[in-house]
Image 1 (cartoon, one colour):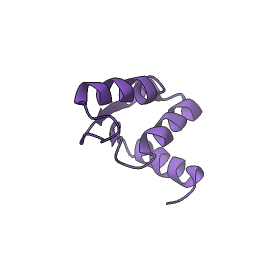
Image 2 (tube, helix red, strand yellow):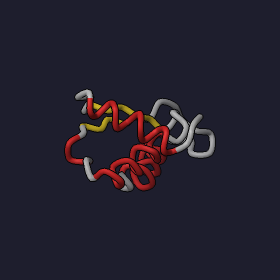
Image 3 (cartoon, helix red, strand yellow):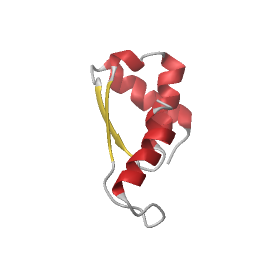
Image 4 (cartoon, helix red, strand yellow):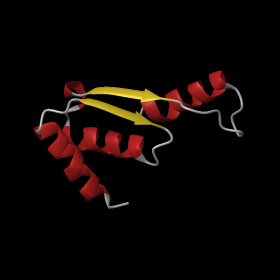
Length: 79
């Protein structure tokens, strides 16, 4: 829950505290979108190590290679 501004405040505070290894996944709701917006807003993308993963195969995209390609195209390139 929460607004993007609340999420940005949380991520900003994590960065201020020295948290520069961020982990996300396509199953964490809109986490990847929020992190991408945060990077765009702050310009700190090169200061954060970002890990992402795929944790299950979606029935709409049944092959893992297809899922990875789709994720890369729509999420990773956006960040």
